[in-house]
Image (tube, rainbow, N blue to C red; front, side, top):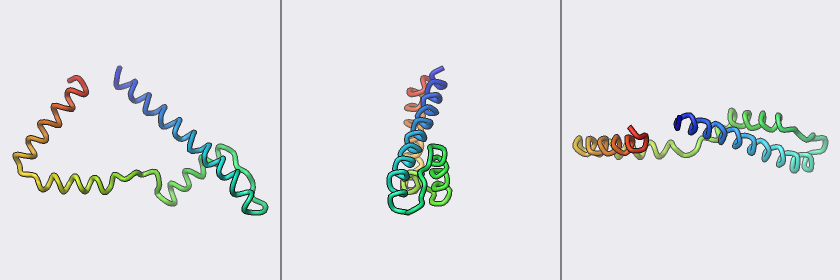
Length: 102
């Protein structure tokens, strides 16, 4: 049950985040673009969400910065001795078991 609540909370957070981002894009577009370009129209919320999707496709945004962190962690893992790796895996499994209640 706790898993379902967390998943529902994450889904709700994503939906709210998309709604806020869509509203921000719509507001900024309607404030800036018609004032800069003669004949430019205002957009509605659906067009703002479409603009967000288009910008994601064209520019690859909303990714975060996990790429360089993953490589850094991989280098640390490769530098560990087999004993250090085993100790790390044991500690990680026990912490995960405490978190999930297993």
